[in-house]
Each structure stands twice: as structure tokens, then as C-alpha cells.
Length: 107
Image 1 (tube, rainbow, N blue to C red):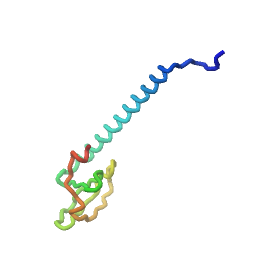
Image 2: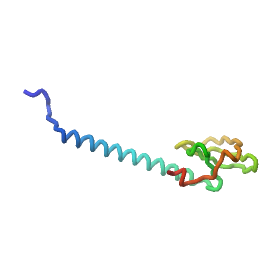
Image 3: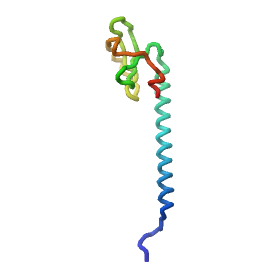
Image 4: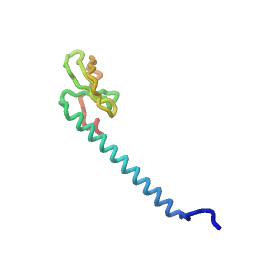
């Protein structure tokens, strides 16, 4: 007598793993869509003319609170996928900031 309880063929294994791959892909797509929607909604509350980006780290977005010609005062509002709620302000040189580019940031 065969010690296996259920005979499972190669087709069943392939079907199972393909279904699992589709499920994982759907979950990753939903998570990506949710993060993109969160980013859009959060940054929509700020004036795009007052937003700046770091030229070295695309994921960091600053809000200019006081536009001084030498060193503007900025506050970080987005940092690598997460909103920043702290109201910490700091002075940054103009060469460390570039204008906010929504196409570059949201892709």
C-alpha cells in the first residue's frame, strides 16, 4: 500500500504556485497603490510652490517656512515614504534644495 494519503500530481503543484504568485502580486499592487494614494493626499495639503526636494535623496520633501535669500528655513514634511509630523525647522543653504518636481517624486 502507498504511504501517501493524497496523490498530488505535477499539475496541481503548478496550479497552486501560480495561484500563490498571482495572490502575492495582487497584494503588492494594492500596497503600492495605497502608499501612492497616501503620498498624494498628504502632500496635497501644501502649496507646491513652497515645497522643495533634496537633490541627493529623492524621498525627502521640505516645506519652506521662511524664504531667506541666503539660507531659507525649512521643515521636513516627507521622509522616504512616511509623513513627518514634527515641527522641527532648520536653515539650509539654497544649493541643498531643488524645486519640488512631482513627476520625479511620484514615480
